[in-house]
Image (tube, rainbow over all chains, first blue to last red; front, side, top):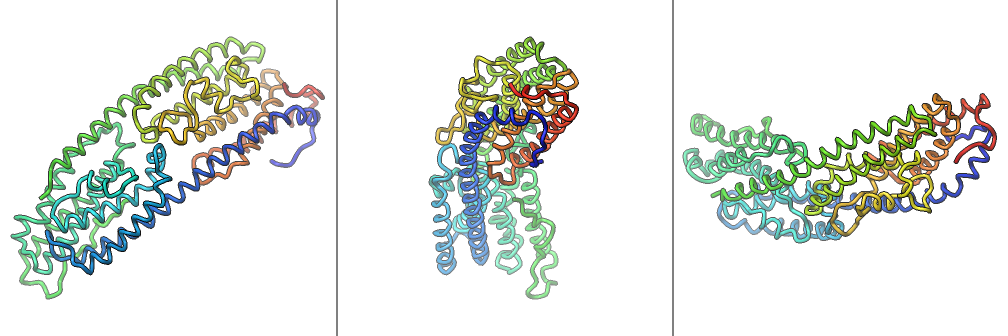
Length: 260
Length: 235
């Protein structure tokens, strides 16, 4: 490759192909510019998505310090998270132009991770304050100019169940909620409803490779989360008096599978 | 309290998307079936001497035009939806069709569709004009042929022609390998201008150099034995 062998007739061919070669090159120069523009945009979006993911995770961590539902979030946590939300919105604003019109679906996969994590964060916040699920329309209204697909919304809700699980187990083990109360109303009951409704969703097998690809994996993780809370409630009810003070149920089981 | 309507709405959306995908799937299946028959016809070029190729190319053109009708049918449906949401469904078949068009044109078919300015291959604009679809849309959200699809199709043309270089010799045609060599070296130089990232285009275009080498080896064998006469090269 690369080195020219001298074979007869080469010079003639060279001359003959010069014209088409230069027009080919100018065509490809044009393609190069187009592709460069595409790659640059793609990278900007990926970077913003990563930053949004990291900030959303921090919001979720902070929210796990909340101990009550159906009440305003304590001001110190709200203050921290407001700063983060502001940063998140700056990141989204910085790529709105890259995701306009036809580009919204073109780069959907690149921004999807950030959007899903953001949904997990705001839906958790929403749930803690109101004990209700944020709707797709509410999420979309918080992200003007950004495409929020139903798939991202659903995946965000699946991730929310993991946070609800942590929150419920902490509440149970701290004694704030008794196992019998937990079975009547609140997080565990809501988790069961979400679980049942998610299990009922059906995607045609023929299209599963293209739409809602992560559905079955996420569903499994979600089922595991619900069971963890159920087992925690059971454990505390049955062995509650035997547990040493400061004991918390083990949350590090096999359910902590993060899907990206 | 969880509002259960949220999940009913989701199921509705999933069902709507399924309907769209079903509709697209049916058209793409037809396009694929016709595509296979186009490719079967074009593969006869490997065993047909150049001066007897005309009927083969005419047959191929008929199939290609039939495929074009399917593309227009696809366009009509796809235009009702975001382009990139469903593009992955048909991109492969569209690439195969563009490969067939380019091959057929390179071999001397579809002459009436080649622009006066173009060299040995149809530009993306010429392909778009032939198929009656827009190309490289950047703002408008509508069905079109993308740059990536066009480039991937050209790579397949290069691969197919490198095989043809070998088979031409077997058919006693010592000129065609030279033409093929010039053409794919020209394209190779073009691809080398691109700054490719780690994607499918990168992976596929990495293979071009092997095709170029394959053809160079054929040309080398011929010239070593004096089977190509001075000044006879290229069309």
